[in-house]
Image (cartoon, rainbow over all chains, first blue to last red; front, side):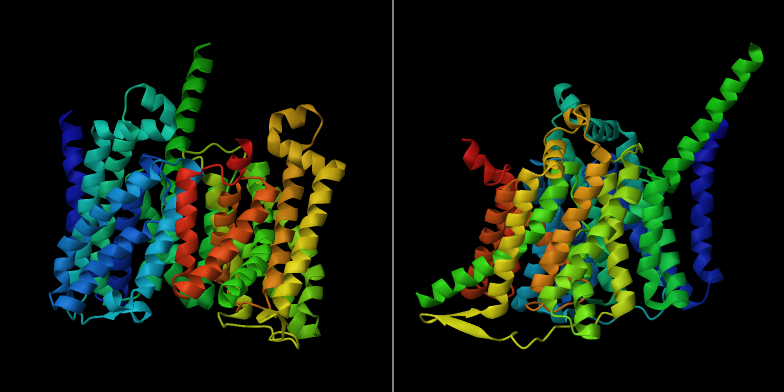
Length: 322
Length: 291
C-alpha cells in the first residue's frame, strides 16, 4: 500500500521537475514554441474529452468556447485598454455563461443530432463575430503586443493551465460524477431509468469543459497576440481538429488528448518542414488509419492489448493446469 | 414588389441546385444512418474535376458534369467499400466512429485538392455566365435557370430509378429496414456501396451546376456540407421529396436574408432555421404529412 501511495506522488513530482527544467535545457525558441502549442492543444483536447469522451456528447462546436475565451481577452484591451491577462479570468466565465443556454438547447438532442446542433452553433458564433464589426473588428481581427519577449513565462503559464485542466478532469472522473458520465455515454435510457437526471449531468460535463476551453482560448490570445474569427472559431482547424486529436490519443482516457496533441503538433511541424503544405493531408491520412485500425486511439488500444495479453496468460495457465 | 419576386425566384433557382446535393446526402443518411461530413468535400472534388475539364480541354461545365459524375461515383464506391464498411464490425467507445472517419476523409480530400490546385480562388467564365433574360421587370440569370432545369431533370430521373428499378427498390428497402431487406435476399453491403456512389455522383452534379455561380477553393466544401445538412434536417432524413422542399426553403430563406438583412448574415439565417427545426420539428417537413 505504501509503495502505491509513493507512486501516486513520485510520478507527478518527476514530471513537474522535468517540466520546470525543460525550458532551460531546450533553449531554442522554436522548440519552446512547439511545446507551448502542444500544451495548448493538450488542454483543449482534455476539455473536449470531458464532454465528448467521458459523457459521450460528441461536440462539433468547441471552437465557440475557445474563441469566446480568446475574444474576451482580446476585446478587453481593444475596447477598454485593460490588460489581456485579465481575459484568463473573464474568458472562462464568459464561456461557461454562454455554455448554459447552448447546453439547454443542444442536450435535448442525441447522437448525430447533437453533433449537428453544436456544429451549427459553432458556425453561428464564427459568422456573428465576423460580421459584428463594431464589437469585434470583424475579419481584420485583433492584434496586441506580447507582454514577454521570451517564451519561458508563456511556457510556465501553459504548463500550469494544462496541469489545472488535468486535475479538474481527473478529480471529476474519479468522483461519482465520472460514473454518471460514463453511464450516460453507454446507455442514456438506462441511466435515466436508474434515476440519473441526464441533462443536469451532461451540463456538469459541459460547464468545466467550456471553462477550460475558454481559459486556454484566453491564453492563446495572449501568446499568439493575433486572433481573427476565422482562426479561433474555425470549424475545420479547431472544432474538428480537436476531435481528431482526442481520437488519435485515446477517447475517454486522462492522458489520451495530451498524447494526441503531442503527435498532432509534432507531425504537423515535421511535415511542414518536409512536405510543405501537405502537412494536414498527412495528418488526415494518419487519422483515418488510426480510426480504422485503432478505433479507441493510442492510449485506449494499449489497455485492450494489455488485457488481451493477460487473458492469453490466464488461458495458458488453465491449459497448463489441465 | 419586383425586388421581392426577384429574390424569391433567385432563391428557388438556387434552392433546386442545393436540393440536388442534399438528395445525395439524404440517400446516404437513409441507408447507412450516419451523417456524412465528407459530403461537401465530394461536391468540391466534383467542382474541381469540372473546372479542370473546362480549363484544360475547354469542356463546358454542363457537359463536364458527365465526367465528374462517373468519377465521383467511383470515388464514393471505393470510400464506402474500403473505409466506411470496414468500421461496421469494429467495436469502439464512441458510436460516432464512422462519422469521425468521414471527417478524416473530408480532411484528406480537401488537402489533396489544395496540394494539386493550391488555395487560390478560381472561377469559370463562360460566354453565358453573366447573361440574363427578363420576365416582366424581373431579370433572371441564364446559368441559374440552366442549373435549375438540369437539377430538376436529374431529380426526376433519380425518382424513376428509385421507384421503378429493382436496384432502386432494394436501396429503399435497405433504408427502411436493413435486416428485413437482408432476409429478402438484398445484398445490403453492396447496396450501401452503390448508394454512397450515387450520393457522391449527385454531389458532383450539384457541384458542376453551381460552378458557374460560385468561386472555387478547397475549403468551399464546408459550405456545402452545412447547406446539405440544413436541407436534410429540414426535409426529414431519407426523404427525397423532403430534400427538394428543404432545398427550396433554404434557397429562398438565404436570398431573402441576403436582400433584406445583409450578405454577411445570410448564412446565419440558414443555421438558425436549422437549429429551430432540429429542436421543434425533428422529423422535418415530413412530420406535417404524417399528421
